[in-house]
Length: 187
Image 1 (cartoon, rainbow, N blue to C red):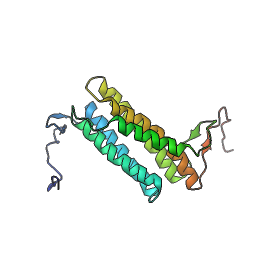
Image 2 (cartoon, helix red, strand yellow):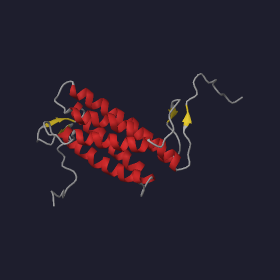
Image 3 (cartoon, rainbow, N blue to C red):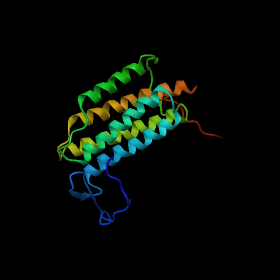
Image 4 (tube, rainbow, N blue to C red):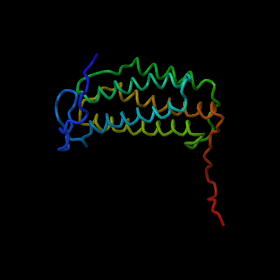
């Protein structure tokens, strides 16, 4: 069994710093902390999606993704540590292709809707894009392995496809964006 935390609070972060996995201390609002913090937030939002799709094949895929995201968070928290590889990216692509096969081709943009579960999945997708942006920003100033960034890019695509699948699975409908629609105002 790994380390057991006997105390949750340490008081070491009261000065606005936090410890990285290599023991160094950095500002809590630093770019590296923002990157792995956003990956952690994404993992939490995916947990919300899983609560809506419990016991389905999508739940199983999302469970695996949560483990990958925890690994990616560790990679970002420990400078020089690599946990995500091209194998992880390829697994996402295979999962994405499998889920996308039965979906109708998109002809228009869709709005983030389609029921509670699909909407939660769209929220996960947007948090994933923010995590990807945070990793891109971090990579401008510090070493970051490219596979983690690629993973987040593919994951946002997978979450989009999952939202479409979930909307249909739960009897919801995709809401199409109406280009050039007139504004509707109650009289």
